[in-house]
Length: 396
Image (cartoon, rainbow, N blue to C red; front, side, top):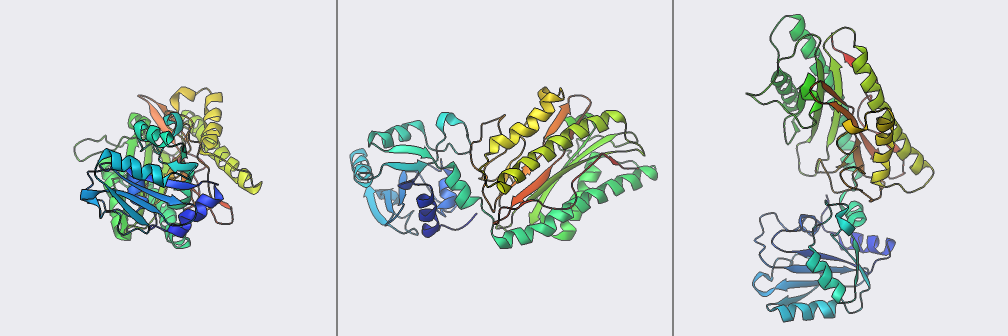
């Protein structure tokens, strides 16, 4: 999320007892490195480059002779290569006194979001006697940390999303009570209009799913594809937005409602299980930071998933518990995941992520309850935004 900062990277390397961080790219294969190194998205990258940041001292650039200028904006000594022999010679000399370096690699591909360096390149580095470790935690420490300004800017957006959900339920109530035709797409566009009023940005229209569509986690209505909304329908709304500027961070929540005055027990039952899974996951993060103990992404997923599994619905929780939140909606920090991956990355102060367990009963309905979590620089664990949902909203 931030501009390249040599001092910050070297501080991280010393804190993690690593000799260096070795960035590698071939034909834009490593978007994580390109982001950290401030290489423009439209750069014409057709050859391999390496950039070694040692824990102290001057960085080293190894670039191809016909693309020698791509790293000129970065500090360090530059070596150019043309032949394979000259490349391996520069690498050998550069890594001569390096024992352990981080690269965008994940052992056994446990965290594919981090795996950007191919196996052959890892083998080549090891041939020089270098131990390669994952840069996953380093990326979180450098690229997933929010500034104080970002947090302050995010707070009103997060609160507004809760208000917009309630306004959306009021919109449904008013339209249904007036016996007017109403669809998922209508509610989606109502939310988009609310974003426009507040000058918020979203990368994709929100999810509004009715009945069986709520059981599809990534369903979204379109102009010509939607279901009507009627009395006695179950409705899921998932919306996300941020201030409309590149360095703004996201807010992302999910609520559910029932188009009636009294919510049937079958919806209450599933919601209560999901809400309990959400709250116990949040409580685990709070407890670990209060006790000054480390916590990793997969552990958060385990807590919520075990609650849903113990209730007999484990097979119906079909995604991870949460995702990192940065200037990207699905950010570069740790995800709350021991399902799709085993995310062993640590949770750090000044980072944010969602907690959003769900139960999806295909062909009937699905419940997801999503909150955003921010860990302050002082290690206070905060649920951002307005109130978290405590019961299925009775829309009428």
